[in-house]
Length: 80
Image 1 (tube, helix red, strand yellow):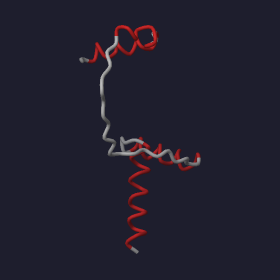
Image 2: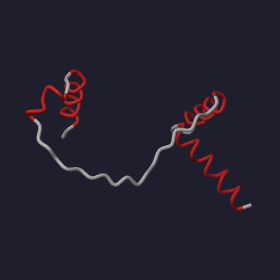
Image 3: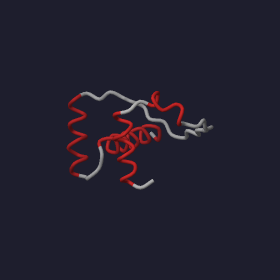
C-alpha cells in the first residue's frame, strides 16, 4: 500500500466505524511475536527538559537520550 492509499485509509477510518462494515469484512487469523517491550516511566519536569534540550542539540529523540544515559549509568554501576 503506497503512502497516499494509507493516508486515504486513515482519513476514512477516522470518520467511519468498522461496525458499519462487518458484512464487507472477512475473518483472518493473525499471530504476534512480540520481542520488544516499551515501559512508560515518569520523569520529573527538570529531567525531561534537560533531555529534550540535549536531544535537540544531538538531533535525537528524548527517548534515545534517556535510554543511552540510563544504559551507560546502569552498566557502569553493575561493572563496579
